[in-house]
Length: 279
Image (cartoon, rainbow, N blue to C red; front, side, top):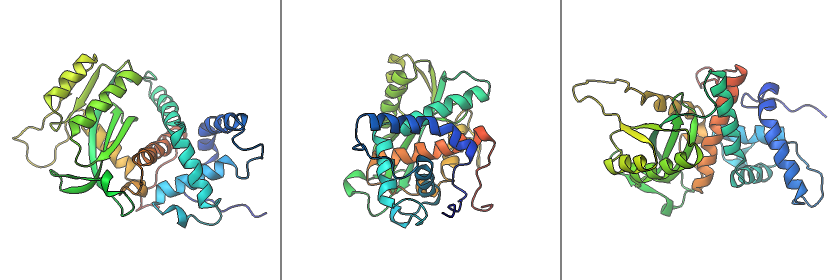
């Protein structure tokens, strides 16, 4: 059989070695629960992961997957299973720890930054899950993300764009307090309210609101806050995130985790993430 042609988004051998143990363990455990009815898997995990990364990187609809990948229904089913069973968040956590250690830092962060991004949605997103961000005049959804101080993802919450930053921020602060107990400091922008600062303090986290100097003219990076803007830039390398195409908010979050898995695996193997000018 002729070998499948490789695409730029496909995993290299080095990148596959980083994610294969988690996916292989998931398949072994799944088969142990007899969910595959005893049948051997028809498609290998690497090809399935390549197909899912292809969708994430290029932004195409699932039905438009090239025919040299497995059927799109199969690829989407695996993506859905990995989202539901927390495999993508697990991979994100493991790679984040590896990158932090590679940078000479502790595996777990002690500080984080919270920010949000309002994004337009596609026609398949239910109207009930959308809203209007009055400040940015965007109808769609809002992605609230929490990153460490070098820009790696700690958590994400996808809501209607009408949800206030402080409401989504309260959820993320509670998440970081429960899942990352070493975090004792966080920075946010002026869109977050004082009551959230008090809520964070009750959870043992010092929240600082970083405000723009009114006298500043033009663009000026804010201390600590510029890191989250860089992370959002990393995400925009993945065209599936240029607009929210996912019918379910959980799948939208999974696409963000997938993009960060792509970014971190490339960082660990020294492979560059081509932008569209150089692709």
